Amino acid sequence: MKFNVILACGGSGKRSGLPYNKLLLNVGGAPLLALTISRFYHESISKIIVAYNADDLNAVSKITQGMDNVALCKGGESRADSIANALKYVDDDCDYVIIHDGARCNLPRQCLIDAMRDAVTYGASALYTDSVDSLRQICEDGVSSVAVDRNKIKRIQTPQIFKAEEIKLAYRLAAEDCANFTDDATLFERYIGKPVHLTKGSEDNYKVTTPQDCSIINGGEIFIGNGWDTHRLDVGRKLILGGIEIPHDKGLVAHSDGDVLIHAIMDAILSAIHERDIGVLFPDSDNSYKDVSSVVLLREVLNIVNSKKFKINSVSAVIMAQKPKLSAHIPTIQINLARIMGIDENRVSITATTTEKLGMVGREEGISVSSVAALKRV
Ligand code: MG
Image 1 (cartoon, rainbow, N blue to C red):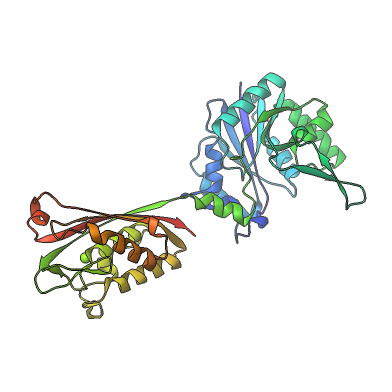
Image 2 (tube, protein in one colour):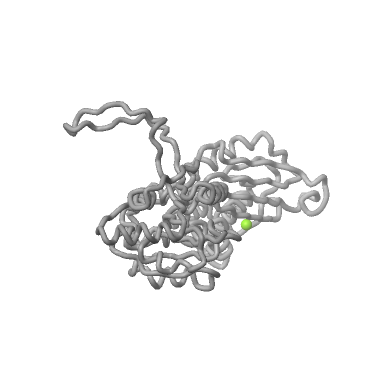
């Protein structure tokens, strides 16, 4: 059985509030459209036809360049016009046409497989979800309303799948009528007169439409960064860790105050947002950073985080020091760092360990810190 896919991408995506078509939105490093296309890599699908908006020709061409089995077709004035155009590109030997909204980029694979199976079994299929809200229907006066049994109402999604010859005929008849439909299943029933089988869809298969949808789709993404720093211990210096002075007979030697913990955390944060490290940002050749509090440097790093529209989700660090014993100071350090970074203290986790007297840490020559930061887009 041979399937072709038509992706309805002819809209301008204005409701997304983006200054460009939402199909070009960067989702985890790839355009939303590329993600949608990837949902249809299936051995029975021989062609994916993208009905694009003329304004996006260059961008869509670039996204689909080198993709096997992807054909481009100019969309029309309405969604129905776009589908009618795209049907001309369906292969002659195609058995079923899968019509899908380009902005439903999270289509679960099982939903696609179920809908393809049901289309073959019943002749046509469309995905649905149930309503979790109670439903009411507005009466003819336009004001009052009556309750509707929500179990009898289904929300229809795409893909919707039809026999190729039948959906082509349905669209030819609709064109003769100058009829416009927003939904292929409705058009199919109107002109072919056969029922469309409903296949259980998924809430994950939502259509990215509003600015909230755009931020949700990227909001869950976590950016991880690593940081590491080591400083030498010597007499005549204060020991500062996490902005807190720790009583000890030695302190860390550095151009700044030597707060090795904050240094490692800053590098982890910068790494997570693809920025260069603190050695580049605050070079020790710059005298303005001489003996500077590392808290000041951390605040500068937080400004960069803000300006790149990220926020810190959590920070973790392990301090490797033979002496002094740090356990009693950890809660104070965590609270201090959380306040500086403006996050809940539960999101700052500091642990301390010795190296069992091994290596330079074990010989009390220095202290090392390893850190990991997790950031999200705002
Ligand atoms: Mg350092």
